[in-house]
Length: 431
Ligand code: HAM
Image 1 (cartoon, rainbow, N blue to C red):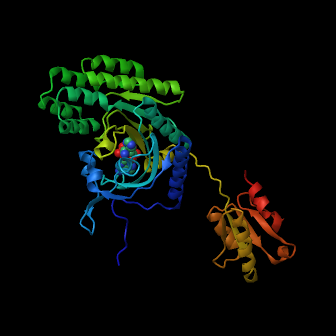
Image 2 (image 1 turned 90 degrees about the horizontal axis):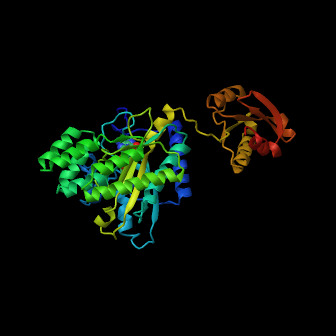
Image 3 (image 1 turned 60 degrees about the horizontal axis):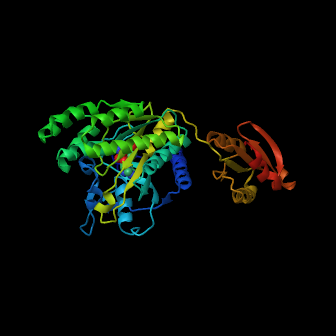
């Protein structure tokens, strides 16, 4: 048979990458815990109709869609939000609000593979459902900030916009939802000229066109000055003015929270997902021009799925991209494991080696036993090569005294240690 490779866009994670991914997963789970988000596990395969409902044209066309053997139209989830919204609209319908839900897992999009863009990738996802208050939006931003900080990333920036401002203008101009969605898709890709063309063709007023032309220029770190300019710019568009007020309130709460976040306001920022109704945001590091995470407020999705009207805000973090950013920034991962290799000096001591290894494992010390029948020198070389920290050499002479030789492979030092002291000796070392 031929040699198989993973399918295009799919990847194997070898041990080192897996350990980095699990490290981030651990941090994501810790954030969920300290912010009060309960984890749920939803299926990878969902009804196509559910997933496609408000995902936006671009992503809809990139879903892995198929018929199952029962003839149902299904797809691999391209995100978690639709699945969590389905839960809130059905099983969790009567749960007291707010609901804070966390999910972690793989998602699937038929994107063009390149660095940081895969067809199977991983997200940590947080949804805060039931509140339309700005403090809920700020909580989602703060927990994203906490995650970026806790994995050791530096100089990350939040780009924030407000889709309610754009929708407020377009609604008042009488633009239909489909037209608006097409405009947002183009704005998401920064194709402002093309977006404006659709606005014009849809019969929007001159005022609307000049407002949008000015609006896309409003961008920068002086967030309150920009919010003020935005407020003046959209005067006359009632819902847009309300949206700017909400935007302002969120920016104010970020400042008052004392949370050190580097924020850039970008009034012309749009995202491809169609369900957003309020603030939207993405996180970037300077080394990388694609987002490490993104989210925003979506107040109508749960109702669309037949649930009670439930305002909501959420975020998904792209774990694969966080891994790349950590590697680029050389962020260090704490390693707490102290792996030990147990080597019997001769055939007859294999049983003793197994017994000692078991004693160490009971004390939670990671142990590997020499299973290749190598002599001590070779076995030590191998332990070194595999970056073990210690070797325990089980020899007849020491065993008679109830002891073994403990070798620190990094320092290249060794000493004889009594069996009953070995666990303490290992646990006390290297702190
Ligand atoms: P999203 O912006 O589509 O939002 O995806 C979130 C993150 O997933 C992106 O910022 C990026 O880091 C990562 N990502 C997206 N596509 C790829 C890819 N092809 N390869 C690797 N990583 C990728 C959502 O998914 C929304 N559900 C977020 C949300 C939750 N909004 C409200 N609640």
